[in-house]
Length: 338
Image (cartoon, rainbow, N blue to C red; front, side, top):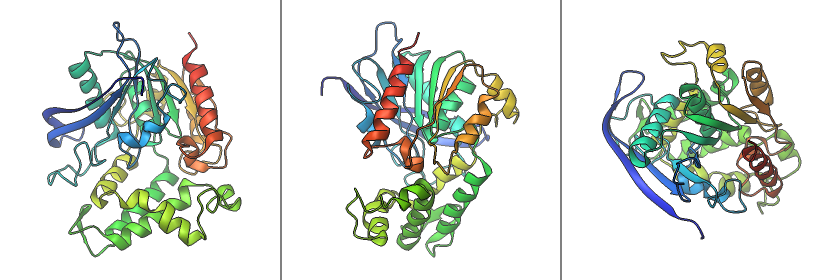
């Protein structure tokens, strides 16, 4: 590895959330890649996505990757609820809702207090990370030069909410559920059902039609794919953390704050950041139509769909070289523009 890395934990104490609730003993885990330039002008913030921890995103960081740490100083803050930063799995009094905006406000404080960074060159994010990138652009339009939203949106759409409510209802139906997304023990059967529900939306109908669940995964059958290949990615996490991050995702909305008072159009029109929106052509969570509707209200934006049958996973193509190359080329070209 030819670039520096650092890890840390930002602990500002008790913080008041947008809801008025208090997150006690707040802790934001982070890792950085690369070297901060003398003028602090080479910063990219790369928030984590649903259930992901910073190590899960390292595959795209490298001199030949999507984000180059020999050029950029990349800071990956672990999202609340992911098991590393403040999460219900280790915080008994974790609030019922920690929003995307709460995450971004803490990330802003992290950069200022730890690194003395007042402005960033770019915020890059996939899925819930993309929603955080959108929030950065809306909440801090004078502190962000660019934002790259990969398979994300300004507000969680109703169809997306239906899916998320199904996930939460599955966990709530577990005999181990104590109420409010808390569990007496890990609800293993409900977690397996949770993973199977997730598999219906994360990958497209075309992807399954092409039998990509069998190749290149090496699965012998659909059940083998779902149980052996797919489910472990969720079973490694605590149910209460997955439940809490679902709540964050459900409520994600760049206009749901005192600044915009729920007016999404106003929030979009107020963004002065240069935006690159990269939905997957076959994404069922964040379809191209969502970003296309947002484009009408953005000042400086480009819509560049990923031409893929990998559904939502096209935005995180760790095992998909073609989509990874598309992302790499698009992101690097766009970041090189003056």
